[in-house]
Amino acid sequence: MKDGSANGPGNAAGADEASALAGRTLLVGVCGGIAAYKCAEVVSALRQAGADVHVIMTDAACRFVTPLTFQALSNNPVHTDMFADSSSWEIAHIGLVRKTDLFVVLGATANTLAKLAHGIADNLLTTCVLATRKPVLVAPAMNTQMLEAAATQHNLRTLRERGLSFVEPGAGFLACGEIGEGRLAEPEQILAAIEHLVRRTDCMRGERVLITAGPTREFFDPFRFLSNPSSGRMGYALAEEARARGATVTVISGQTSLPVPAEVAVVQVTSAREMHAAVMEHLPGTTVFIGAAAVSDFRPSHYSETKVKKGDAARTLVLEHNPDILADVSAHRPTGCFVAGFAAETEHLEEYGREKLQAKQLDCIVANQIAGAGGAFGGSDSEVIILWGRDGRQAVPRASKHIVAGAILDRIANLKTAGHGAQPPGVSRSRPSGPS
Image (cartoon, rainbow, N blue to C red; front, side, top):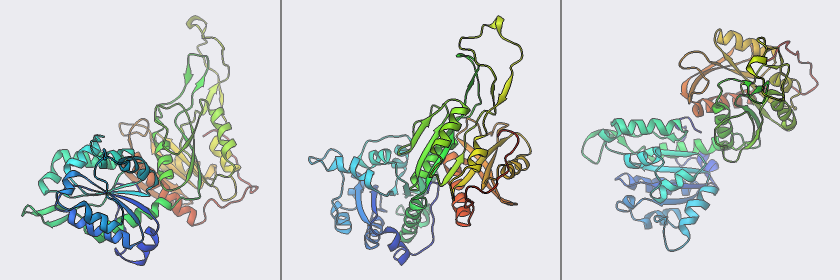
């Protein structure tokens, strides 16, 4: 889960946790602070729940609790030195982060949070966090004044926006003698959050997800084209989140400067017709389709093989419709495939979104505003309204696109469980008259 917080129900040593954590490989980082003694209790409970626990300790953590303590509790060697004489640093840095199901950072200090927020990797723990592509759960612990400092709050916001999950610190008597927020969350709360995240990691296992992302470009000569300001961030965030939940993900992407998400297959296209062809090629076997791309509705009716000179250019550009990718996917979906679309509007957001939902016979649609300073195009955050059925509605407040993507996938999972997307092929679907 990448929603900025992780608080799940359940008791630390209950049967639910045992079934969720049994056989899981967890990487636990322990930071330097008095809360390190409580981290030992968490590691012990994780092992009792059946998890294979590997511990990384910072130098400061070793001043509060010895590595031998965590070695005895985890029954695994404890990693403290990235440049140890043996090759264990390489195993921790590369091997462990690849095979782990979840990375938990316990007792995260203000110093460690600052390093993580700024990409500083000067010890084994921070290096492993930077290297992992698996979910990361952070449990901070520090003095109240340090927690409330503007720099710390900024770093916490940054990490949440990047998709890290948090177990919020508790309030009470602190080691400094003060009473306030900053205590490490209780072990049972941390275990409940870990169990919740592990379950979420598996919630899309077995799903084959096909996502369109980014803009399309419609050239009318080798130099000029029609397009839009879409950055592709929402489609890529959906891809990363679906992969983190265990799905096999393919993205059909227009031109974007975004890095390719880890363990996601990306097919690069340029025009709407190329995107349509690639989508229909990859559609068989798809269980979830999400049309997040900003597809050009029109293309120039004529393409010049050479650059059109200013004096020769016509003042009127003749356009023709592009294929309707979303409607065609809905009409030719594989059995049981869930189809979700996006509706980017400047006005009448819900009205137009619901019209598109019904016209294309989608299982749900994500309506977002593209006008104004908070518009969806190009920004790193967004707010959307998810619509489904006759009157289903969920407003997702403004947050990073990773967090919004998580909310969208949560809703899709709930709707799939309720039976949406189960209509078999061959059932009549009305085809809308216009493009998306």
